[in-house]
Length: 215
Image 1: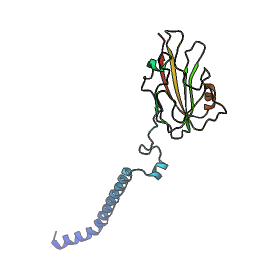
Image 2: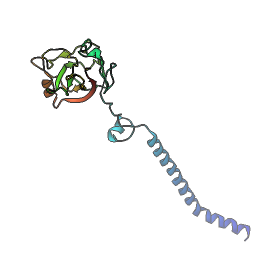
Image 3: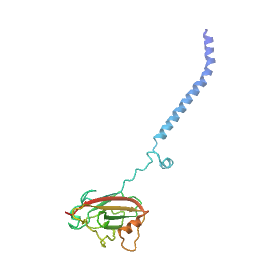
């Protein structure tokens, strides 16, 4: 083909291919921009508005609250109560500590009972109106700011373990309750009064059990 005819053919083909090349380039650029925007959105840490609309996203979920715990440095849960804290020793209350109190707690209640007594459950210690800011009961005394109720023997004090008959193992249950409102009593409450007032107002509970048997 002569050179002049070849140049003319190229000139006629060029306009047809230019729009196709231009359209393909624009499509590729748009695709790249779209992918970059999607990647940026996916990697962006969700803010308050995003978490409000997508609360189930892993980054938006709040960590689960830890369960309330009640412990003692004198004995482990399920372990034997040292004789120091029983009628065979000095009859003083053991040291107690608690943690992970719910944020909406208005007050705490602590009940100590012996469910293994032959005549029925015996109340050993009734504590109420414990401020949620208190996190321990020192050895030999109630928590600071707490009020003492009435135990089975009619005293507002700690009743030490003294199981009968001798040789029988009793399980002394220390129960801590977190409440969502203040519990009001016209007179020092008994164990049953506390339990009745707790209905419908418990935020969390914790339990510690100690065993003891007279030789």
